[in-house]
Image (tube, rainbow, N blue to C red):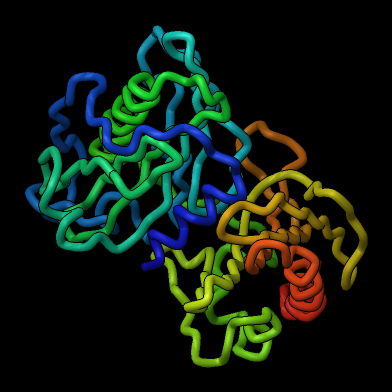
Length: 325
């Protein structure tokens, strides 16, 4: 369930409009063999390939320079512990690429797709209607998502899928070469805290429609957590890496700069997001990065004020439980 909820959240919050989920066309599939000494090169697990999953740095296997020369690719500011972002322009189409979300694959995912060396399968994801997605499923059933979308409604779907396929091949090249590395976490980091453990029931039930019996949807990476009620109300708490939060408004809450954003209603929900600053984060030669804490509250259409009121209460309580700045 958690992967489907994640897709809903990405669609609503990032305003992703490209739709090519059922297309499988793209660049030719490359046969990638292990060049690194894995424990079992015929059955490569996610932890074998990536290291400790809660500390893995997705950008360590995303190299714009390894992509086709016809592409213009730039590594974006990382927006989460679990995802690495890249901007790609190819064949007149501009796409945003996300690499890194990990999930537990089901039987369909683990048995349908292009078989690669090491027991790895690459599976087109026809459930992701907002992007062209490919799932790299390791031999132990842990999936790694590669997805490409565009804010341009006229973007060519086939080209977006070519980008996803090309990125998959480049990521697997780096994985097979043993290039995956852990994140270097600063003091007082939230990178080793699972929000599913931090956000207690009394906090979750501040969201109207979410009752104490709604169970947390734990994530493989341990950096985000979802609570989803049967009525459609949801809460997402996520630890991110980015710049100083921005939104429709901002203020200091419990000593942290905090930004609030109200999203326009769609047919299914109202969404309010609240992002709070945390400690500075060093990432290569990029400056001004920090860890952030993000709350997204989903209510029924027409209830965004209610969503924001609950989000403010949550932020006020949750910020006090975080490591100090």
